[in-house]
Length: 227
Image (cartoon, rainbow, N blue to C red; front, top):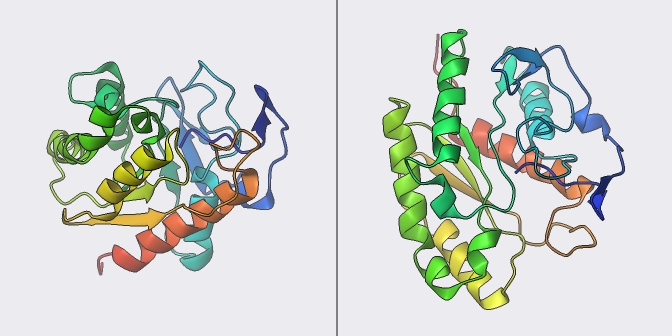
């Protein structure tokens, strides 16, 4: 989710597709919890341990605005940390706490949280136990985050893995993602989207496609309430 499109050998090619260009209608909450016009890489000051590139966030926002021109300004709140396991997002961990704090900061500035976009799980394909427990841990995370944001029906759109470290364990994690039964949870499948040369992360065109898939899932399943 941090966006590694165009990143190879720890270097970003700095090629930004039109679907990821800045727009005055797309803002991002930076690491200081201040709103600025969004630009790639969205997570540059959030996940500072690695090189970030193009991700699905900007294409998501552009597609929402293209299909619903009256949507208004979109505020993206990047919180992802690449290479993390679901246990690193359990309630009480630093990543979970940061996510809640950043989400609440967006609310204090007048925003409204419309959805959580979630793409994670490759690191949980390295160990049998972690793969087997993934669904239980993931669902607890979703329930906890809804409770702590005081939004029990918060729309969540998660991505089923496009890749993993172990093909057998990858399918266990993917099954947990695809066989969901929580309310207001939609899953889109990234399997088959083109990968970078590392065989693990999505390429820039794939990131753009994923962003549009996320937008379609958001607009088609969580319509705006009548004013």
